[in-house]
Image (cartoon, rainbow, N blue to C red; front, side, top):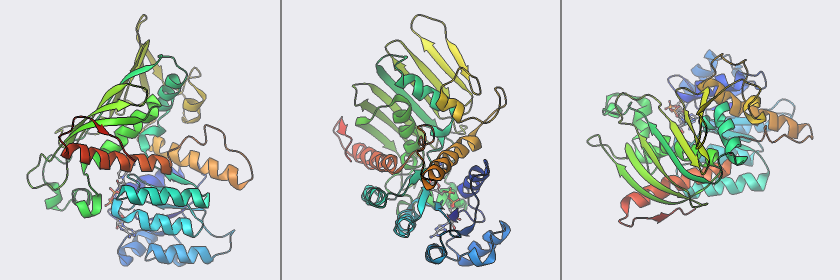
Length: 379
Ligand SMILES: NC(=O)c1ccc[n+]([C@@H]2O[C@H](COP(=O)([O-])OP(=O)(O)OC[C@H]3O[C@@H](n4cnc5c(N)ncnc54)[C@H](O)[C@@H]3O)[C@@H](O)[C@H]2O)c1
């Protein structure tokens, strides 16, 4: 793996490195870890990246790695920069034959996302999009139970992602992560809906195995002077006729990462909380509530494949992130060896999820600005 972004003082790059390291399948071989060449090199030195592969810019890294003999060069590039610096390095990586892992939202605009998706299809390379929450074993279990029809036809999906960390104008007080997230030129058309609403929408579609077709959005800029939404509520309609709600907020004072989803079918439903990720609550119309727990033999092959420890040993955010990297790496390894990856290995988000995520952002912003009640989810 080569990494772009994630140097000193960055947030998610370090999480990606832990996730990639977890199963011994991936080695960090090179990096261009910051937009500032000096910081990039100092960051790479801290991580013991060899001097000749510790690059000052991503362009230098991709070109130099491309020149190396095939058995020495990296297989893939992980892009952990802010949203505005996703598209160009991702396109360049694909054009030079490297697979890509990239954080969400996939690009700055829907147009860029479609171009990137087309490039993935043209090259046949893999793009893995790190929608972290789809990596949890109990999320996999929830999806399998829905897909197996255990709840009958799905009728309602309610997802909420409240955070409180942007309750004050911390972007004006030197918080690097807040600064770019609230700047339209770096974050994109939306703040909160792009940053965490996209996670909620992806989780809803993934677990319910449905697609959003219509929305009615109310986006708010609650903190004075903020240029992008920091809060919002969206009514949803899905392609099977189900309805739902999506709430995302970064001004829900006191909340940490309280992502929660409830899905209801004709015969029962389920409930999952990211802050208690090893329990899945399953509800029945005509029977008592059940608690499914990570690490047990009664779970689906997808849930079992995505946990590492016996039941009762907590697995969490880092392991969920690790599952995305592991499935991507197992898929890549199988393909490189001329084999066929299993359905469990192939179960990670990709460029089509990235296009849907960018469409979600553009559609909720347009719906939020329109007086029309129902707004068609357009791609
Ligand atoms: N999957 C998740 O749960 C999750 C969580 C947090 C952030 N993210 C996403 O990860 C991305 C990064 O977020 P963050 O909070 O870590 O940001 P950050 O500001 O903490 O770090 C960004 C890093 O990118 C570097 N960078 C910027 N431009 C660069 C360039 N041209 N070349 C090389 N490096 C460059 C910066 O120097 C910095 O090291 C965003 O797209 C964000 O939406 C995803």
